Length: 264
Image (tube, rainbow, N blue to C red):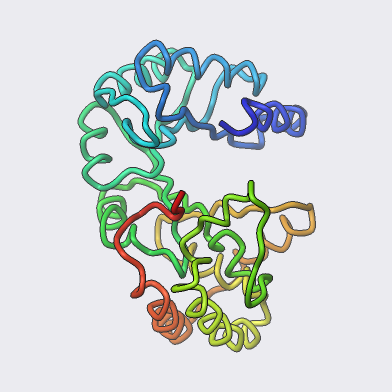
């Protein structure tokens, strides 16, 4: 889905000399979940990545999402289990699955990870899948941990996006929610300042402070990668976490239970 394999090819080129030091994670989309489609998609990714094994292969969205035709999870998991037994993938993960969907998938094989949207301003997973994952040893790979850049504080009072920028449809940028976001950011700044970190680092530190939760942090430069990584050195106090939780609720309490971030 990402550039029709372009991102995988870029990744392969960038990490060819250090393959043993990195973990490759990629996905199969919801419109490729029949047995033969999963196998073919995995082979394309292996070719793009120039590797014999994908470390974590994930179902990007559940069957039926984004207008795709429903496919029994048993069929999809059978393909993934076969790929795993052949050594073409090392582990199976799911993305954007509810607790019920993870539980069903786990009936047909071992699910190692869940990739949901999760940040200070987007916390629906806490009421659904996160408790199950914590109890079952399923690692949570939080995407959008800085809420599409909102939690870096880089956007002004009225951000303007290009027509093809998917943030135009992000629910946190909508007029009924965004003023709450701006007010919450102002309350978070003193916490970041006293911990001597940026707002983005504070947001990342909050996500990874939860046991069994990792953060997938976007970056557009080597400097941003290094800045994001420094969030791992921050140990938030119980008082900071409590204050951040209170601030967070001023945004999340105004959202409904729809786990999808965008209104397309």
